[in-house]
Length: 270
Image (tube, rainbow, N blue to C red):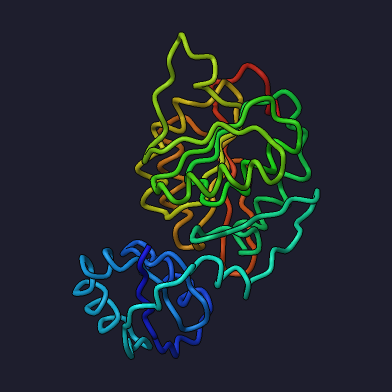
């Protein structure tokens, strides 16, 4: 697979603005960031280079210095050699390849820490936008009976499968951009817990699907956004019968917890 490396100089002072830039340029095809080197598959660069150049020119504190094709080599192997695998709690090990989510970002670690405080024994869990599969793997390690992981990117799906095998857990990893509608004949189409660590707009777009796929009293945990995004997410969730339970944050990044209000008990089943 051919790659281009984009050398991008950034003078963005606020860390959350830099994270936002990285997130947005990822939506244009960049799949790995190493300092000021941004890597993108060559076919995506050829397809999106005008949009990327315009985006960098528009973004204050950002300058695209150059773009060049990487040497024809085993790019992933070279990148992994410079980025050794670190062990996470419960002995979880993640090979990130070109998918984001090695477990150290503020949003991911916040969700992991919350998972570590829960008893998921016998529960069904969905990880929407799974990336490397790290959250799905933790859910399975913590006793979940069934874990489904969905991602829109084929590379992420393969990476999540690889990491599940590395950690010796069984996860149902699927390619897709949204949560499938529950099916009466499919017992694994409704969940006790849904995790989604994605961009705010994608979370709002999928809110009806999240609500439909939760069992009564089931919980929805969202992250991947900032404080200013919380009101619109809470409002969207409320309109679909999801009760706001808690707000947490790790630095500039926020997490929201909701419960399916169609519940006969005052407490969550998790």
